[in-house]
Length: 51
Image (cartoon, rainbow, N blue to C red; front, side):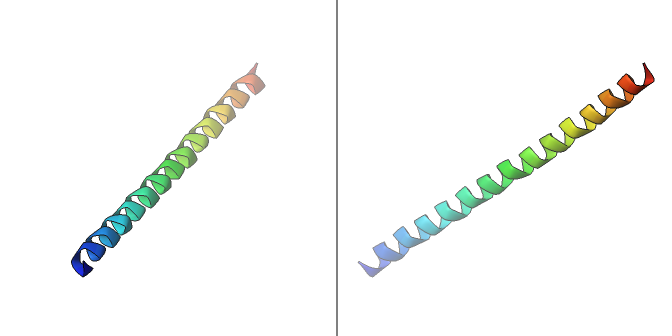
């Protein structure tokens, strides 16, 4: 019974780590993506200023 409990808690712990990692990865991708959008927008503004 004790062994079973430790396996279950271990599994939950691993699940928690994986979920956290995925969330962090997603937010990281969003940050990179938003930076790209800002950069493209700045380039667009520069082009418009030239005109």
